[in-house]
Structures are given as structure tokens and as C-alpha cells.
Length: 242
Image (cartoon, rainbow, N blue to C red; front, top):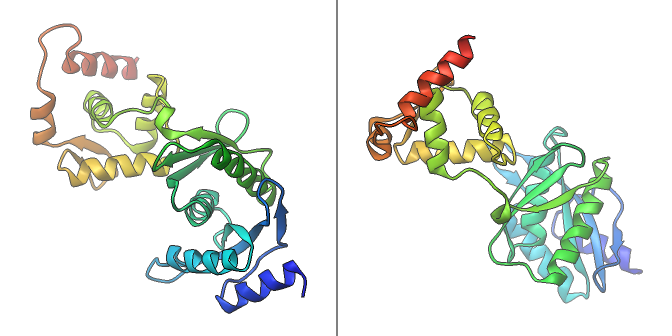
């Protein structure tokens, strides 16, 4: 049995459904890209799980194959979830999270690392992104390290919510970009707001708009000069009505 046949047999043993051809990875000795179907249960659980991928990866490594799983979400519109699952499954020691955006020009993969990646990891990662882009018919996929990007801090997000409250998600993203902050994706923005909501700093109203809690207003405090958030809010409302 040749290498591809052995890999397919091992994948079958681990109940991992292939959804495309296994392709060699020239950046890694004995390396292969393996496209696997990512499915979802009615309760929201995903399969294969991270643990199942880790077990299969270890089994393949023991047989002499270094595999990068590229997970193809059965919900074909979810490129971001496929990217995240692929990177977490293939780089579990390095990648903490990942986000996707089409950006201006080439699509971007925004990656949050657990630690500073070494050069060999970056090379392997770039090869993974290139193959991922090919499978999803993207014109390319550039790597952006999230920790080096000019994303808004949670304090800056709170200040923007205060200035434009009540504000919906698309408008908040737009205002942060207008302030020259990077907003990796809507999912990234949702996660920031969820963290602030769990910290009792923002409220999501029934109409979907966000506003600050009393605790957040107290933490932000007030200023008595022209940079006061209340003065900026009045100016913002004036611009919106003009």
C-alpha cells in the first residue's frame, strides 16, 4: 500500500471523512494536507473534535506522516469556522484562535498565537494557508499576527460604545475602523463584546443595540474639557443628524 493509501486507511480507522484529495506538503518532510469534513450536531457540537484530531494526528505521526488537517465546514458559507478549526487542529501548540476577513484586496487570516512562532512554524503555516485558499477558491490568504495588529483595546471599545450609544454591531465596527483600528471580523467583534457583557460592562438590548452599564460608566469616569466623552457624544450626534 502506498503512502496515500496508508493515510486514507488510518483516517478511516479514526472515522475522519475525507472531502477531497490528499496533497503532499513540500514545506514539511513526510507532510500532507488532508481535507476533512467538519459537521455540526443539533446542539451545536462539532465533529471531529479537537481531541479526535489530536489522536489521529499522533497516530499518523507514529506512522511517519506529518499531517495538516484542513477542515471543510458543511455549512459552506463558514470559511472562518473552517479556517479556525483547521489551524487549531494542525497547530494546537501554537495557535490560540483565528479569524477571517476578505479585507481590501487579498483575504486575511488573523491569527492569535499562544507564543511567538518560530520561522519553521511560519513557513508551514503559510503553506497551510495557501492550500486552504486553493480549496476555498480564494485569490490568496495572507497571514496577520493578531498581537501585532492595531486592534482596539476593550477600553477603547467601551469609549466608542459610550460615544455612540445605543449602537449596533455593524456601526460599532465601522466607527472603530474610522478611528484606524483593525477589526479582524464580526466574530472577533462579537467575542470582545461578549467578554465585556460577561464583565458587566455592556448591555445588549432587545433591539440588538449595545449600551454601557452603570459600572462601565463609573469606571470610565467623566472629564470636564473638550475631550470629554460626553462632548464627543454630542458632536457625534450632531454629525449624524447633519
